[in-house]
Length: 266
Image (cartoon, rainbow, N blue to C red; front, side, top):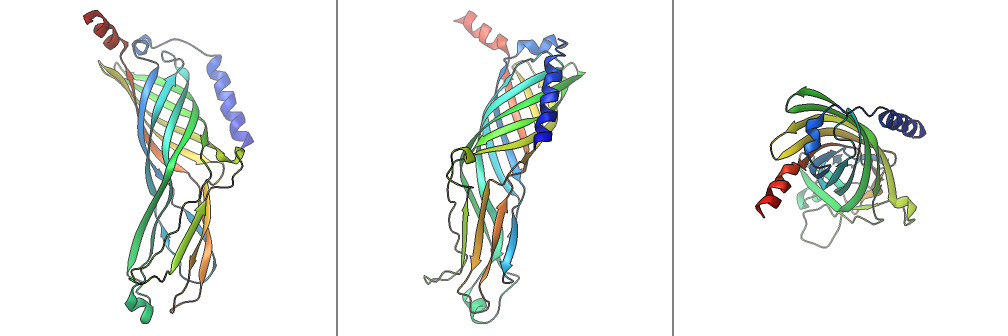
């Protein structure tokens, strides 16, 4: 982790010492941008402790929105920061479907049931070092790397009961939570990098970026338990969600002339 931070700081230092204005056309757009995006989280991992019944984790979709600010929009190198709200997921899994028939005779392995659970919003502030190069009059190639600090409140993320029975009998449980209740432990760090294209239009500069987020620690951990099964002994294990994801963000920086035209008409 320390090595990553040192590398990022060296790149930031390079940017501050190499401010060459090259792209005057980018100056006509606002430094503030409106951000919307989506993400696909890496599927969670499990560590069985005993028993032979488990489940299959699936990559988890999510979304985010916020604001972005570009400090040096007309330069090759720039520092970009943002304030993001993101929906943090808890699990997305395919689990055994325990029917009356399967409980009275044998496990129907070909049958399954899907469960998805999201939590509440996290708040994060990424800081990027960006490098852009002109491709054409309306296109710029952009590379980014940086770090992100995320605030994610402590909480427990529920119980999942997997069965298709009409009775009150329960056959499985998931207990997931963030790390602990310490305020500082609610701050999560990650390394983030990616690339994209900047498109110039008459009304907006549109930035489209794909990126990868690698967390320094797991945001959600927990355990699962299958029980009360006449076809099997108790099955239990640990659950780990890394929070790593691939994302796609679109940012809109409006043309400053739009506001000038409106003020003249007014």
